[in-house]
Image (cartoon, rainbow, N blue to C red; front, side, top):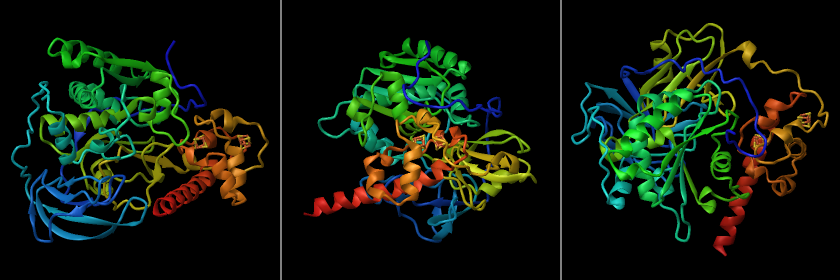
Length: 455
Ligand code: SF4
Ligand code: SF4
């Protein structure tokens, strides 16, 4: 039987209408806007000034703290400004604006297609390359990878899990990466496995991607003949069920272990990385190539041309849309990411980030919400919740402003998957109510910890 997680989940139509679109290189835009805060942690600090010339792959901002990441120029050209600019959500964010001139790369970056399978033994040097390459988790969290690969003392990783589920409807960039860059993903996996000092790595892929499962199995068979470093890596076919790719759900499905409330994957011996992150690790370690581009699915039934594009970081969204034929007249909403967890885009002049995985165009009909009715106490939201929460109760407590009770009922464990909202026959906007309540409770928990630490 195909494995899956043990609690909740839903089965939306996968709508992967761009799955046949090979990754295509988007021409470099005339200007990029590279945001200084595009990872979890402190914003990066600029290393360049207005008027400076930069090359592709040049570090233009350094980490602003322990949990932070380097940012590199995705183009060659001149720094035109370092100033606040509206991001995807319409909030001001410091950006480095670069006017493109030519396409000159930093020396030492290997831009060839040659696959490098030899992995150096020096783990400290590998971690340095990952840090200097500005690698962050590309599965959505954008947590700096070198920090995640350095478990705290006393914590031991037993298994590396590579997340190839791509369980959100519509998204196909990870699927295309598995098909088109499978060798690089597997070498990246072997590098991460070595750094963590684990014997086992599992690449989890949902069973609606049989071509990817077959291809990665072939790649593994051929790479095992090259080096023993590829032993211990296996592919696991997982049930198509949303949110199979949620970190805690994936650990449950693969290892049969549950991460406790407030706990971390490493507490149960797991480290999870996304397929695109494994590729970024390969690029940084084997090719000296920092994150300067990433694959973005551009999709939606109303969009003129489906695509998976390799996009330079900092590319304006409007440039991508124009390249593919312009904004469809009937597009009512554009989402960054998938329909379940993605966020509505408020500003099409905003630029892509390292973690931008998709642009999804939806019509008025697709986004229309039915009028909200009263809760009929059917319990469907609780059955669907993969975190074992009671969304109907959280909804009631949030509306009543009962913050302490929200914490007692673990609102902070909500992964914002939207399964409750998807399942509710009364069309109650559960996630819209629960998300800000969760933010409030997390703020309180942090303030309490800070006060305790100051004593
Ligand atoms: S959004 Fe939160 S409360 Fe709703 S199903 Fe997902 S984890 Fe549960
Ligand atoms: S699914 Fe909706 S109607 Fe049913 S219990 Fe939950 S909130 Fe109430």
